[in-house]
Structure formats: structure tokens, C-alpha cells
Length: 113
Length: 111
Image 1 (cartoon, rainbow over the protein chains, first blue to last red):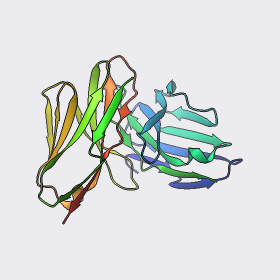
Image 2 (tube, one colour):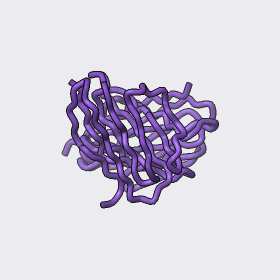
Image 3 (spheres, one colour):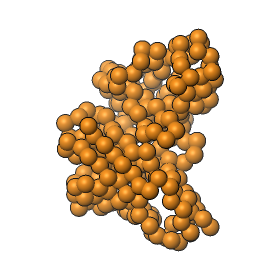
Image 4 (tube, helix red, strand yellow):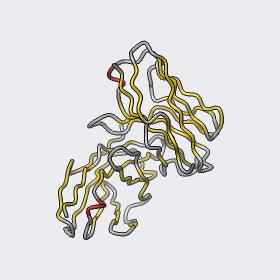
């Protein structure tokens, strides 16, 4: 595996379900990110982890819960989501020294019914 | 508040027809401006970083330029494989790792 891999690629869940998105990076980076991409809207930063420590929580509702067990893995735990949370969730990684040069995974397309 | 505006929203060009995409920005102090390419169903792919006004970067048929208020992505003699959405993002001087993205320009190159 190379680059940034995300699973699952597609997820459909009900409002009462609990699910998790997984991200793994094989680039040796020390920062990982979750972004949300909705139609006609800019990419929106959700969470940032540097060296496994969360350094940014961009006012994200508590129904989204991130976890970063090491610098190569990142999870996004989802529970009691709303239909408006349906979007493409993108994981990215970078070196801390160049946080603007992000390497993205292909995303997890989430649909909340 | 940092802002990024990209224009046009969509652009259709004939193969070989050169053009430019615009990214206007407002930040407290620019730490970096970044261009990405995004193909349908995929995550964005990093293209360029620009740090200061007057700087230029080139890659194949693409050239990015930067002024104090905007950046241009020039596409010379484009090919159908250049079709994608091009995203611009800025990082503010006194911010953290947060990037502010524009909504992108969807470029279609017609054979």
C-alpha cells in the first residue's frame, strides 16, 4: 500500500447507527487531518493531529469523535448522525513543517438516512 | 476572517485553447497559497505552493503565479486529461495548520 488509504469508500447509515471511518498513511508523515467536503462548499477542516496529539478541533459536533492511536492511523467515529452530515470525508497527511502540502486519501462517501 | 474566491466556477475549453483560472484571497498575512487538482470521486492532489508575491511555479502545462491579492493558474495548450476541478487554498501567517479553501473551478477540456 502506498499514499493514504481510507476505508470504507462508501457508507450508508441510519441516524441511530454507530460506525467508524479508517485512514492509514504510508508516507512517514507526522500530521493527519480529517476534512469534510460537501457539494458546492469549500473543503472544511474538522480535526488535526500532530504527533498523535489533537491540535485542532474546528467546532465539530460531538457526534464526530476522532481517534489517532499512532502517527500512521486515524479514525473518525460516527454516532447519531444527521442527514446533513452526508458528505465526502477526506483524510489527509503532511509533514508538520509544511501543513499546506497535504496528501489526501480518496475519501469515504457517507450517506445518512 | 480568511476568504478565498475562485473564478470562474466552471470553464470549458477546446483542446489546445490556453486560459487562466483565478484565485482571489483575503488573509491577515499569507504564509502560503496552495493549488490542488481533484478528479471526480478522488481526493485532491497537491500541485503547487507559492509563498510570496512574484513567485511562479510550473509543472507540465500548468503555471501558477502569485500577487498580493490573487493567484492565477495558467493552463497552456490543455489536453483532455487536464479536465478536473482545481482548488486553491491559503494558510494565514498567524494561524495554525488550518487551510482555507475556495470552492474550486471545474475545468473541462473538449477534444
